[in-house]
Length: 387
Image (tube, rainbow, N blue to C red; front, top):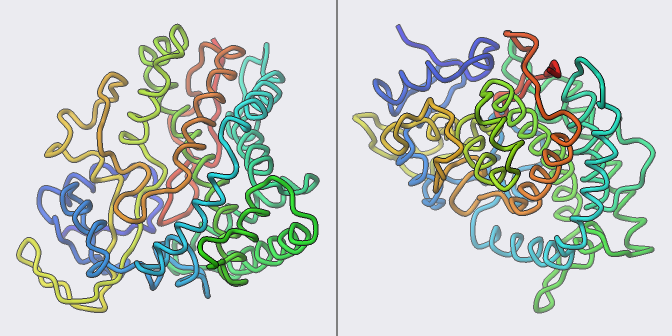
């Protein structure tokens, strides 16, 4: 009897065989382990993402939600409140021009890559991507330097869950509270002494007299720190994994860095770190012979939709010439990721600088340890050998 447990370390290690079974045999599947429905086909996921009136995010979008977060962030609200929040946050993003960040991002990439020169092997995450992502996030948000490692540790704990209890453990809740306290201190300081950074702009963002309230500023800032560290860091590690495993693609982008943007998009399709998000049904839905009831939770398996052969020919092939339009690596519908531009820019620059120092590399270990998260998928370590 088929079962699908998104909390399982076995699924973390390789979810794609289960995804194929779900798409082919159980496209609308009740997961007893997760206590929610699972939608695995691209068309169904896109349709659900667009139909926020039916598939609501207001009770949280993480597979295992953090307490008190739902209803006050971009990912956990529905229109019209979501549109208001998105407009105000987007207004802050627009004030922080990407062009002003590209130079500092390149400097960070070069500084993080330089120590890898001449090393026969290294941990891509511990020695490069974690340092890069935290420093970029601190520069973009305007966070004070000094405790980058602790902020990263707490952000990663926030997105994890206990695979045995399928719930947030005390250390995950404590990390979330720590991050709120940390963000509150930064926000208060920026209100007193505003500068040209995102947190200052969030705190002061105003459109037609409308501003974010205190809880919205706090939880939006907390979520951006969490997402910025996990999403960008997770994607960078998955991109490096893809290039390490596909030598022809790696050699192509090293020889011609202009191919990096296409390789980035294919990696977001092929092996996204953003695997699964949830919604809550507002009405009964009949789909593929199943009846989902109002009040039920639904998992949108983005990682499965990206491998759906109904949408992408030969989906299990990593092809950097594919140009996968409409992939779900940044979500979709009204909740498409707001930070896509800075994420794309950061990854492109990071790998340009990384490849200057380490142009040829391969994976050392066949089996990886994966972060225990029902929502995101990324390795804890990625040991690479430089050829």
